[in-house]
Amino acid sequence: MEQPIVGHDRIITQLQHAIRLNRIAGAYLFVGPAGVGKETVATHFAKSINCLKHGESACGNCISCRKTDVGNHPDTQIVHPSGAWIKIDQIRELQTRIVYRPLEGVRKIVILKEAERMNLEAANALLKTLEEPPAESVLILLTTNLDALLPTIRSRCQIIKFIPLTQTELGRYLSERFHLAEREALAVATLAGGAVGRALSYLESRDTEESESNQHVDEEIPEILTTTDRLAAFRIAEHYGDNPDELDSLVEWYRDLLLLHQDVPPDLLTHIYHVDALKRLVPHYSRYRLQSAIKTIFETKNALGRNINATLALEVMALKLMSDRT
Image (tube, rainbow, N blue to C red; front, side):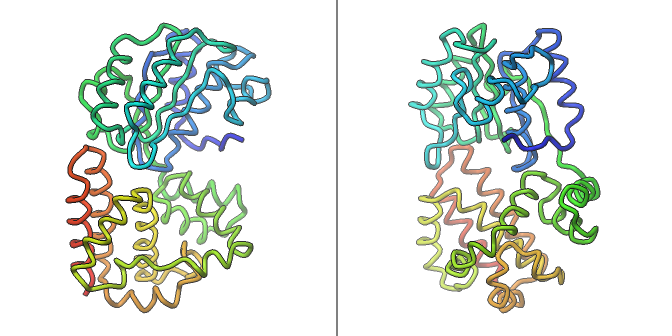
């Protein structure tokens, strides 16, 4: 089931206008923070294009919309990184499929998630498709980092920028939808940075904490938060090189420490089963150093998307994070 679209009214109106006038671009580039709603809007746009009601917005009930919802529409393909990168073989497969006429819908649609994680070969291969896109196709690239993409790719896409909601707007939505107290809703909105997807993920994980309590108890605090051994930085960097998706989880640990530093109620933390251990770590960090650590992780993620030396970038990150601990 598609997540609700919260905010982004201007973008939705723009995309509906393109459908109504049959002026859908061959390639779009959706840019914005993680969890801001890029994928939700992209999926809704794909459904709207191929909806059997042929309106400017998806009905959500026809067989085409339902197939897209469950991920088996023959004319909608989602590409995401295989490991750390989107590789050239994935782009070649995309190119093989997109050249054929749609089987059931109006257009072939490809949603390319985390486009900043294409390696150079994949990016250059995709560029050929963007230069000569098939007439009945739409490519939608999603990225958190516009600068990580080749200028030639950016220039061939219609760029649409997604902006997070204000904390007040998101807090109001969460309060109304989930019947949260105003203070709690605002705390969740702040934790999510105005990104609806992050807020919903947080609330969903919180709702299942009781049934998954053993899993949370067994989860270990990342070594980088507890060690002062500089030699460990290289082992830690290797770990995140093999598991780059865990950088997002690492941010959550630092964010929990920051929230505790600000005396936020412990039940609003992501890792509530580690509150006591996290409280023992808080004195080792100033508020400024925690903010700096979170910034360092995000900068490293962006750097990895620019095809730089990943090992070196992660080693530098690990050493900087250790220096933030007193």
